[in-house]
Length: 181
Image (cartoon, rainbow, N blue to C red; front, side):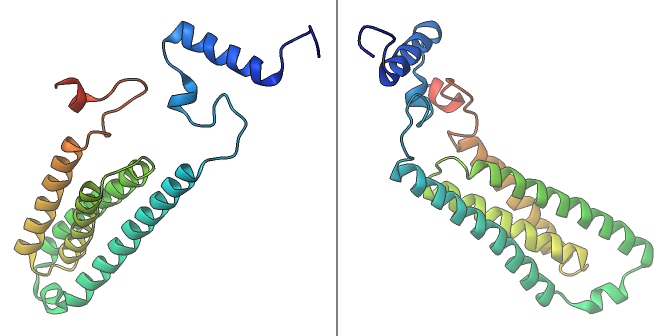
């Protein structure tokens, strides 16, 4: 329309610049696709594809490592254990398995954002090691080695999350790691 209301593109620019004026942030840069009605870019689809591959690798690797630990565990240890001690250790194994499932859920969320290859590899190795260790503890096999593996994986995943710059980002905050330097 001539002389009437602005066109759709001009209206979107006005809304976007108005939002930027009041908040100090441009939503079109923070969230691709906001303020425009275009198709998702190849970058977004490549990032989504990487997230899907990381998530599949995480779940498949955890299942494979737990299965390998179940095969490698010795059933003689379960039969020779004191029934009360076995009950206690199985309860501990269930708690450790719950911690592994919590880590899987948190990493499922974390892999939605871009992640560097060393950080992703560290996360995957830790969750796979934790899954195998929880299975070994549940079988009452190699208890000392399995508990060392589990606690080392837990400590390592916490250290990796601490060093991961994207873990603490929320909104326009650039995170703990980038505000110190």
